[in-house]
Length: 486
Image 1 (cartoon, one colour):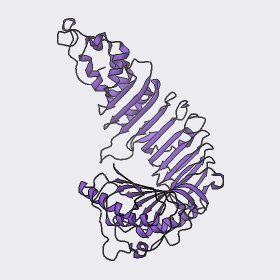
Image 2 (cartoon, one colour):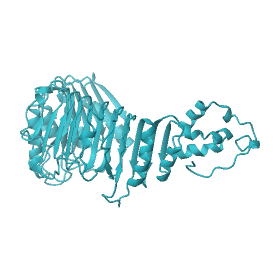
Image 3 (spheres, one colour):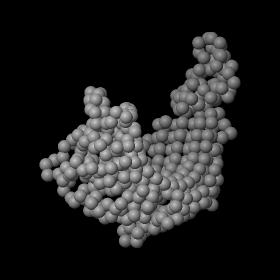
Image 4 (spheres, one colour):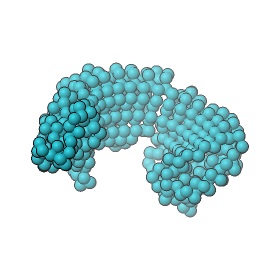
């Protein structure tokens, strides 16, 4: 099977390499040659190497490789290459393609499933004009695979109605449509059909309005951007980490939205959705091992539902008296702040040891909101301050006229952060608002021992030099300041 180009004919007289010299490559043992070819990391390029030596050409060494990487070759060739594969098993099948159709993928996936004992990764890069609908990729049963990662570019995915994924430990399903009439994802992911499953990611799935999973050994699960999700049931007695983000935002019937989650071994919960106790049942009383909680709050009301979202998140916080780590994302609107300030009714935070505070400010003054958070968790010993968004430095540095984000009083109010010993500041760009908050943190944290600052990767070197001179002037001499670049 030729994956790439027509191979030149090799004669016995040319030494196998076309140069008339000694064919030393052919003298190497097969296992050494196969190890070398694996490092090429591309099936088409590997096939081309058969022109290097007569032995490689005759033995078709590429067909003995335990790993096959298909990087943007014609999709129809993947099935032929897998059919010609002669190794006893495959530890990796990697396919990155632009031209996949549901029919072509459905043709070669069963061939891969036959021999795969390791990992399969399939990503379909969809053109912007690609439309939803059409046929479906029929996923076969991978009875020996340990890891499946599928990103089919919103092509429809039809799940196997039977079969046991006996060795599957990790499953990623990203950017896909649920095939019409199918809602058996929970059945597929049950303990009976995936008995070894430990890690599950379901992200950006279209048409998934109901997901019910019961699994005895699942340890880590992420459900993200399932906007149509309406019914969620999770019964996972061994689950330790759960992330549910961007779900329930556009269900078919909002009044019917409901979630019921039972995970008594949970140690980390990331919940950035509304939390309405009348419809969202988190078995919090049994989550006695929970150490880390991640939520999001909106600072200035601007969009419909922001205030209600904050209300529900604060209701969730009230369930906890103590938690080791709180990840809190505070978000401002991209434009002018005209709505009410929504931190005034923030409840007392649990007893916290480690606060990770992410700020998505869009150029607004965030000192007042940061102050309101910090004064409610004075027990924190470590603070991570993360500035978002990450990608650009062009965001506004001053608020437009009439913006209500600034409250000057926080710059003079006293705050006793007597337990705070370590601060890490990430993605610092050196804006006026960032510098002002750092200055106050030095004043409030009287027991501070160490400050680490990681600058944004796009900050000019001149600005870095300026900040390295300015910020230590706010600090006591005994505080260790560590400067880092991303």
